[in-house]
Length: 267
Image (cartoon, rainbow, N blue to C red; front, top):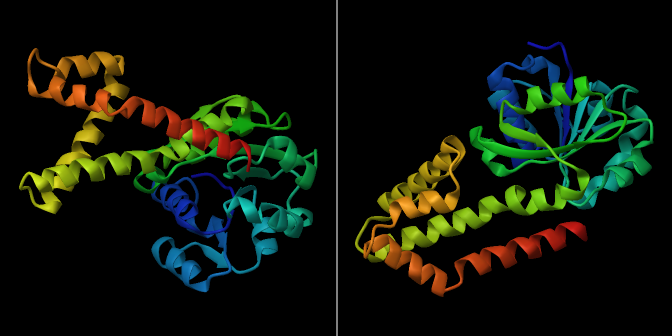
């Protein structure tokens, strides 16, 4: 267990998922974690579930931290940074989870002497299966990056990427759980139309997606090869694939991700 103080400014779904993962993995003691939020209800909930420190004072949370997660919505970043920047410790590692906020922009507000890590997590962190792209500024050392990766692996896989790819990370992992949920919901609706109960349909559809994703990660095979393994000649699967291709599934996903990427660049 590390002797670190970790603070979260903002305590929404993503921050709560991170906090639960960190505490469950025993990365630091609960008393070494603090969350700030305007909502006392959210603070009471996270204290009840994780026994961490809580406050409604963002400056108190900033002053407490060796590692500081800025987990408010992107539109509040400038306001919050201007509020807390004089209370941040000189060697504090500052972690941004906001799409579209570049390292240069963050440094212009926080100071060019600050150690900043730009990240893009996703909501599967809530079940310990997140995926994060991370991008450190030039002030962060390799040890700093490894420390943050060790903390974050309690709820997410991580990969260091160039900053030019951070908007792509937003499209391919940050926002993509929503695309997958739509796909699961559509499969379940069709199963219900075929006579299956709603609860059964969601379990069959979701487990199929989970298992398929695990095959991609663990076999190392190309997704196209794995698809071909399911498609028997003149069988049911290839007929379904034909319809998906005819209806433009690939193109729809491609265009949706490009729209997401463009939106991220403009934030």
